[in-house]
Structures are given as C-alpha cells and as structure tokens.
Image (cartoon, rainbow, N blue to C red; front, side, top):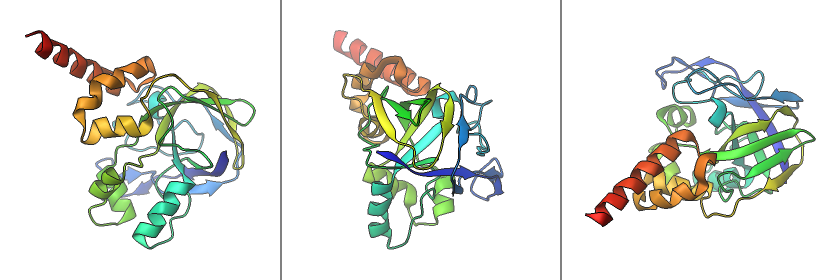
Length: 224
C-alpha cells in the first residue's frame, strides 16, 4: 500500500461554485509536502501546504484536511466513462494504490512515510463543483449510485508526505462503520444512522450530531 500520486490544486475561476474559485483541479507533485491540521471548518482550508481549498464553508478544515481516492476505483471509472482519468482528477490529494479506501473504517489511522499519521473521518459528498469540473452528465447521481466516495482524513500527527510513500494501517477500530457504510447512510439508507454512532467521536462532527439525532428520534418512537 502506498501513495501512488500526491496532488495539489491552485485557485481557478469556476462557474460551478458560489466561491467563484475552486482548487479541485489537483495536479501531481513529487513532494515532500508538509501536512498539518489546518484549523476548524470555515477557517482552515487544506491540510497540505500549497494546496487550495476555496469554499471553506463546505470544504476543508481539520476534519476534512486530506482527501484520498484509490487508483483502483479511478480505473473502474475509466472503464465506465470511456476516458482517461489521471490521478488527482477527482480532486483527491492522495491517489492510493493497494488500499481499500472505501472499506476503511471511521477512526482508522494511516501512518504515511516516517512521521505523518492520519485518521479517517468521513466519505466525500459529491457537489456541483465536482460535477461541473468533470463535465459528465448526471454525475452527482452516478457517483452516488456507485458508492465509491473516497475518504476524508484528519491530521493526528503532522509530518511530510511524498509520492511513493508507504501507507501502514496503524490502527483499525472494532466496529462496522466504514466509509462506504457512512456514505450509504448519508445518501439513501437513513435507517443506518443509529448504527453509525458506533464510530463515536472519530466521526466528522456533523455526521456525529446527525447520527445522535437519528438515534434519539428512534428511541422516542420505540418508547411511545
């Protein structure tokens, strides 16, 4: 398991975002690149030095500091779309090889290189900026239906990262809430939300609060 491609984006004008600019067009760099917690959502942007996140209302921050997508899943999309998809084209910072990103558990920790430690927090939710950049018809629905969202991660221990760095699973929690499981709860199977709570505070705070509300509502229905 390793970082096949390390990708950074620069601000570019776009008609597909309210922020007027987007950093979704990520391009490969060799590194090393410093990675650290960028600050809370709405203030902090990307966890990678030199990487642009322009719409900080919806993207970036400590709990979405790094975005990872598997090369194997990009290859699957190449077959479906009939076009080449270079690493970084989904806006991912890390294009991985040999790692089941969507099967990663919320709270799972990845040691990358010698010092960097990341923790899985949530799946990616497709948006109109993503759809507009990729230029595929009905892209949000197609991406959602495929259930291959990729993973956001927070920085537990800062460090440096380079293309080719090995990835080690340093910790894997004992619950069922994978990136794909949480994506299903978020996009079409709301009955899964109470089970999402098993991931606890490792969840992105917004997902934790939603799971808690759903579980409390279910408990009230059962007691009435």
